[in-house]
Length: 159
Image 1 (cartoon, rainbow, N blue to C red):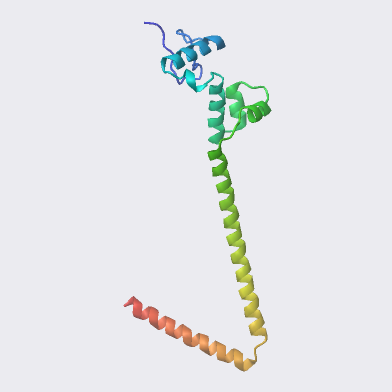
Image 2 (image 1 turned 45 degrees about the vertical axis):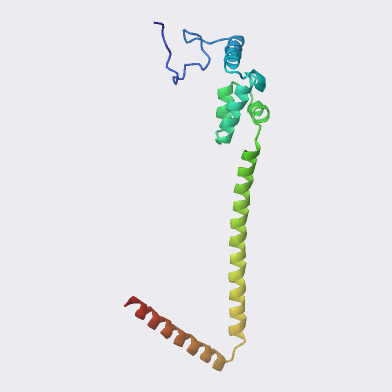
């Protein structure tokens, strides 16, 4: 039996000859076309070169580094990899916009809460600055009474 290359080795090729060497583009296409005919896929307008685009798009969707994808595809310029081989489907766009929307919502919630706290603090400051000493003493007494009631409830609950 002949030599069989390890499929996951860095030196192995996806479309290799029986001896593990590089198969020509036309040879690869011929094998692919034979596969399509055998599996009744001719009617689906699938082209061999589309496999490169699919491979590239899958890597982009996995957020792989464009420079790595460039190396894997053998492009001289990363611009080719990004502009020609990076088509985006609707699901990818939807996921990205959902992430952005979620971030905006979180930032808006944070900003709304910050504003609310500022308003409360401003109202407290205004209220306290306009109080007479007697009103302030009354408020303090009410708050201390409320604390006693709350502390008593908490102790009752602990039992």
